[in-house]
Length: 111
Length: 114
Image 1 (cartoon, rainbow over the protein chains, first blue to last red):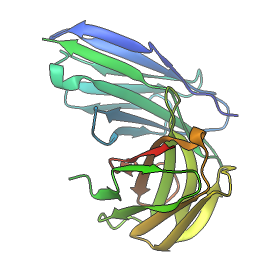
Image 2: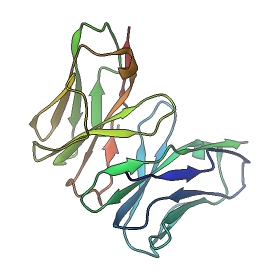
Image 3: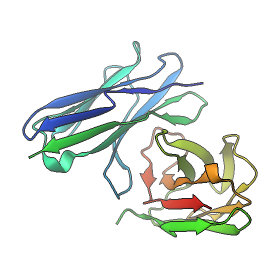
Image 4: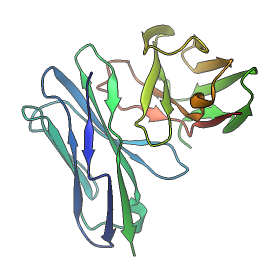
């Protein structure tokens, strides 16, 4: 069974701080890694889909890296703002298998 | 406006009731999904439909019955549910079911079983 772990479970930062969180997944038979942002009372929003080892993707102040050989992805937020407060989900997929989500990292940004 | 609309937003039902959850996507996608999120657990995939054919049934109890009449609509028929089925049910769609495409989610239906 594919096991996707996210750390930390929650994070409280001050406005302007930069932060990062980790998603760990089994490296064998890897196919794709998804990141989503889920704000309270809204629907999960896709941030990135990454497939290649060494991939780096960026969307505004948010960026992500992927290491498929060691089985981890980092999500970085530069200069956190209160509107970045959300749960950040990662999900991994092996070839021929389903998308498996981690439990998420809850980010709270204080102004 | 997410492009994926779920109704109802909230549903309270008894264990002997029959109800249906509805999902509609306006994005021209050809794959649709049902997910369940129980309290303090990760999102769990229930069903996958690609081109209106079911391609994944993640060992879901038969009291949950999906239906995909066309590529824009997805239903989840509920019958004789248990209290542990109380959860948030999310629908999603994507362009293709290959899972290297991002999924677009609805706002979910919050289901409570009495």
